[in-house]
Amino acid sequence: MRYAIVGSGVAGTTAAQTIARADPSGEIDLFGGEAYPYYRRPQLWALIAGELEQDALYYRPVDWYAKRGIRLRLGSNVAAIDRDGHRLTMDDGSTSAYDRVLLATGARPFVPPIAGVQKEGVFALRTLDDALAIKAYAQEVESAVVVGGGLLGLETARALNAAGLEVTVVEFYTHLLPRQLDVEGAAVLQALLEEQGLRIITGARTEAVMGNGRASGIKLQGDVQVGGGLILFSTGVRCEVALAKAAGLQTNRGIIVDSHLETSDEDIFAAGDSTEFRGRVYGIIPPAIEQARVAAANMVDPGSASYAGSVPLTILKVAGAELTSIGDSLGQGEDVVALRHMDLPARHYRKLVLQHGRIIGAILLNDRDRAKIVRQLIERGVDVSARGEQLLDDRFDLGSLLH
Amino acid sequence: MEKQECMVCGYIYDPAVGDPDSGIEPGTPWEAVPDDWYCPDCGADKSMFEKIG
Image (tube, rainbow over all chains, first blue to last red; front, top):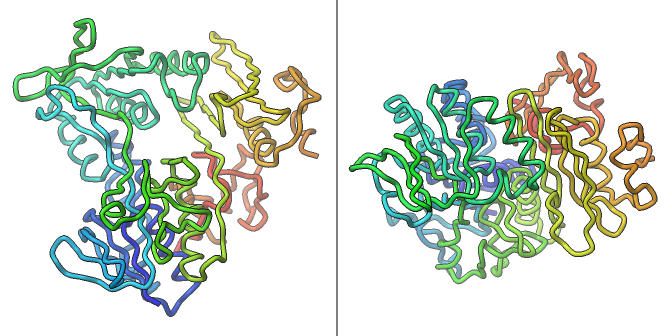
């Protein structure tokens, strides 16, 4: 059996490893568009902050791949899939045969089409090369503007701050981390970040990048200007679906897969950031790993494994504070009840989202033990309806609900 | 004893060190770490870890 994996990020590398274990006699081609083997993408901020060297980002020594019979082909961009002939065509015109292929093509940053984004000093962060370019440019300027107050934006803002720059974060939404936090939780987070020296502007639409050739700041709606020599757009990503689409596979926001991670072609699978499962694109690592393992199992033995979706969990560490967001923490579904406990001066925040008597999401600040219990209550679907407000009470032993 | 690495964030579980903050004593081998333990850096569960090497 000859397996091809398009994309050498977390989903592609995990799948290669899983296939190598399950089918040691199989041939595995792992194609990566970047020049580097698998690295820790979530730690690129640490490279920018100067807290980590480039070599420390790699997970696996280069011989790790060869030892497992994985042919790692870096700098190889797959340009087309010939489904009938079961061949991949590279952008240099060469071809490579496959029996089953995994599309782990990932995502690319989305930069809004506003005036001035082509100026020197404007960046988006996705790849190691992006991080190296940002790190180098950061040494030439004194201030930065990060457009986008999501996870990546905040982490990168802190990194630029650690590298010695004055940093302003501009968020279009009314509060930070709009995908993970509600207004109250975000207020606590914002207070913590401001204490650390970040400047934060929320509810602001960015209209243009200013500067003569080189960026010098941004202009917000209402003619407010924010100065900064380095402008980082952290305004979301788009699934990399072009290859799948050109091959005639079913796509929407992402490449559509069923519970076997199979696309609309039975010999083509997809996993990770490029993938849409039941209308959802997760865009975070744990689901990418889960999907890659299921896809790999099915590539080796069709129908042997299935995927039922993931409960997203995010932990953000901010200067000694630990913010955890689990599952449907915003609670936007029907019949949803939110229980909250907030104490801004003490930097306390706790929120549970309930639906039909079960916890479906939570936000917890500096509350690791409780976060652990809540996570299990969510995963096991424990009925907590008899407890009501007691659930937030410090004196109530939440763990007792697990037994 | 074998170390385990979090595939999500790169945190390394070293049995010699354990994870005292989460109640895992130094000297606890990976197999004895409870299934409900999770990565202290990123929240990934045990299934997200791979043996180093």
